[in-house]
Image 1 (cartoon, rainbow, N blue to C red):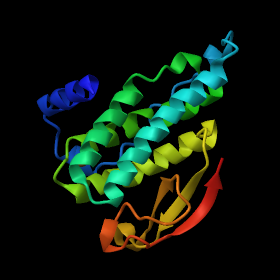
Image 2 (cartoon, rainbow, N blue to C red):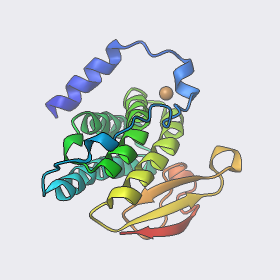
Image 3 (cartoon, helix red, strand yellow):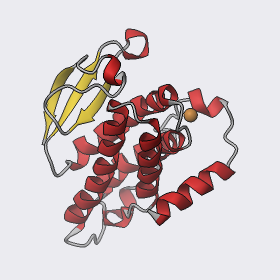
Length: 193
Ligand SMILES: [Cu+2]
């Protein structure tokens, strides 16, 4: 909790350029060649990575659940906590392949989590960031597994009917993009183990 407070305090010090809000960072832009780091990984690396990704998934799900019940302040707290989890993630334990996937989404996911954290009171804006964040988390879960069963759900209406995905730990649809306005809008697309 102390860390969360520090993160919130820290992020309020930064004046974010307004344009950054609508820009989707091209997360593939900072791909680095991680192939060199393959050698000599500890035997427990995959296990360790799964545990840490589990932490990220846990943070994402708290955020999702706050949006589902239209709680913008709780969503902000969860967003800040998720950003902190990303920052403390230990990449040293990843395989080269995992590291590449992680680094593809890392900066983007951190930025979305940060904006969600600093936009308590503006749930529509939080949801905009949540949309892309959900794609990042989906990519991580596909590469790492989540350590639990998750469902990829799809809302066909969000974002001018372009649609948006989210991940859920429950089989029934509970839409985080609209909350109680349209809680059951959407369908399950994929079960993830
Ligand atoms: Cu923003």
